[in-house]
Structures are given as structure tokens and as C-alpha cells.
Length: 491
Image 1: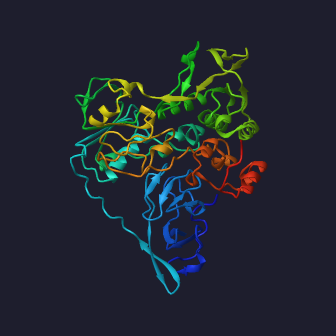
Image 2 (image 1 turned 45 degrees about the horizontal axis):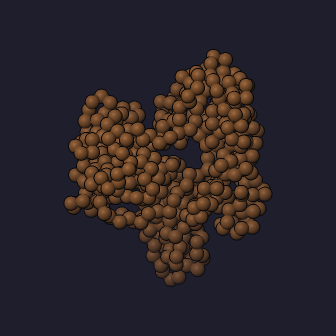
Image 3 (image 1 turned 180 degrees about the vertical axis):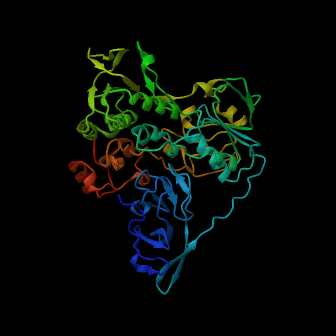
């Protein structure tokens, strides 16, 4: 994948022929030192900054869907009209550019200045908003409140001891030693100060009193609210076997730091779980030179999500990098010798890690049952999907709660964060699925269209464009025969 600025293309300020821009195609060019893409969609022509604001991905190699463009790297989505970041994982917009048609040519002239958002007022706008959860969903909600013009107090309570972080990186580049810790925060502490977001760290919530509109922290501190958003995310699934206290769990920046510190002294690691996070951690620890064993009850890694062919491919890829799999079994005990499996095998290990997660609903249930939606609407309580498991229903004074956050990609961006104003109508976005993990090398970067879950959604919004060199030949052939954008291959 080339960098967005590697090929500057034509100078778009000098103009390009109107008839040279076909429907749905992207032309990469530049205006001065800025990389700019030019595209025609739905008969309209748009000019947009060509570099994704997430990890500088080349938007000119992305996918045009309606009046949006998707980054080919992590599927961030931007409005072609305004440059606004509409979907995860991007937080910041890209520049939209002014277009002038003259003598049969299209000229890109200057960056458009977005109009200021009017302050949101009215009887249905909460006087204050309290967000429980300092992960991707809570952070995105707080940011969206300010972007939408909400001027009331916003408090973000996080159980972590750091600002909200790019959590997926904790099992990827950061764990592998390829990313500096300075890359990990989603925003700096100064950002929250600048935008009037009261970020409170080390704040564990033990009770919610909806009648009094207060929440109580573990240390006894009370916080009041007018509108409440529960964005508590997911906690790691803890093992219930002898010796489980020896296991490292991966959820926070501190967890990743602890695993890195242990890996510096360890030689062998056992990872219990063969899904995305477990495999990402396996790849990262192999980068650090550890002997890595992955244990899982399934017959193939990722089979339930990606199917048997991709599961076999993923296993072979990891094995080619030195990872050893123990599938069809599970851990039954852990001691100083290592990890004992259900088949009687004992794996020597001096570093054990458990993967897996479950919704962190205990805090939400402390005075806030998930069964009474009408009461929550009256009491101005909203949940993100991981906390309350509401299915597609907006509740309370926060008309745009995070409806589903199986992955940060669901939480970040328009339609995936809370906006004030009960009764406000926002179009529900098409479901956004987790991009398939990079895991070990670019061979898996664009397996997203093959995902079983993607096929269930069946939306153009979730279709990528893999390259033939990046897919197993047989699967790519099926994809190509289907037209490259139609039915997805695989089981």
C-alpha cells in the first residue's frame, strides 16, 4: 500500500478535464503541498484531502460509497461533502476543497471552512451529561457532544489511570515493541481541558441512583447528572481454574505494560484463546522473540467468523512464523511448571495470557436494570450496546447513544456517539463491522469482504476491494468471478 503522498499526481488547481473523471473513480492529485483526491459520485464532483487522519492511510486507494469514502487500511469513513469523520477509527476530519468548473475543466481552488455549530438549546437538551466509561465509546461520545454544539458540562469517568487509548494497539504494535507509548492515547490531556470535558481517572462506579440522578464511585464520591450515558465496554473473561492468579489479562495500557515487562524476562508464552486478540498477541510476542503456544477449543482459529478456509490460512500463516497451536482443547490448570490442558499435555510457560471479553454490565446493573426502557427514557439514561445490550433503540435525553460497540469501530464517529436532544431524529448508519485483524503480515489486511458476519449484513457499505496478491488464490478467484464487489466467497 503506497503512502497517500508518494505519487502527487496532477496539479488540480490547474484543472483536469471534466470528462476524464468517471463515476465512482478516484483521481489523486495535489494542490500545493496538499494531497487531494477528486471523485465523481452520484453525478456530483467532490474534492477531499487524500490522507486519512487515523494512521495516514491513502484515501485515494479507498472505496467510494454514496457521498462517503472509506480508508483501505482500517475502514475509517469520511463525508465527501464536508470531510467529517463519520465512522471509526478516525476522530478528526479531512479537509474538503472548493471546486470550480471552467471551460470544461475542474479546478480545485481552496479549502472549505466548516461553518460553526450553533449551540444546542431547548427543553429536551440535558443540563449536564455524565459518561461512565473511558474507552473508545465514551471518548467518542464526549467528543461528539462538543462537535454537535452541546455547551453544558460533560464529565467522563474512567476506571483506567490513563487518558482514553487506542486499545487495539495494546495487543498489536505497542505490544510488539513497534509503537511508542506516545502513539497510544486517543487524545492528550490538554485536549479534554481545551474542549471542556472533565476527564476523571481511576473512577470506579459502584452504584447508580436514577431517582436522585447520581452515581457513586468506589471511594464514596458522588457525581450528579441530568443525562447519563453508560459506555462501560467489556472486561476480560477471567479463568476459573486452579492457578488462574498466574495469568495476565489484557484490557488497559497498564495490562499491556505488565505483559511487556514480563516478556523481557520470559522465553515461552501460552495464550489461551485463538481469536482476534489472542492471535494479535501471539504475533506481537513472536516479534519479541518468545516461543508462543496458542490454546483454543475450536478446530481452527477464527473459523466461526471467517470460515474454515480462512481459518486454515490464518493457522498456516502463524505457524510459518513459529506459533504452535493446541486446538480442540482448553486449559485446566496452571502452576509453576506451566499450563495443563484437557488432553493431559502440560505446556512449559513463564508467561500466560488469557484473551476473551464480556460486557461490563455489573456497574450498569447497580441500580439500573436493563428491563425498564421507558423508565430510563424518563430518567435520561442511555447505554452503549456493550453495557446494556439494547438492540437498535434510542433512549433517554441522549438521542445518539452508541448502539453497538462490539469493537471500537462501532463506537467512533457519526451515529456511533451520543448527541443531546431527546426526540432528535438521526438516520441510523448501516452496521459497521470490525475490520479483520492484520495479525502477522499484510496478507490478511483485506480479508474483510470474506467475513461471514459481513455477508450477513449484505451492505455495500461493508465491501472492500482486496488485491489478488493478498488473498489465497482460490478465494480470490471466487471473489473475482462474483464481480469483485458482489457476493462474497467462502463458506
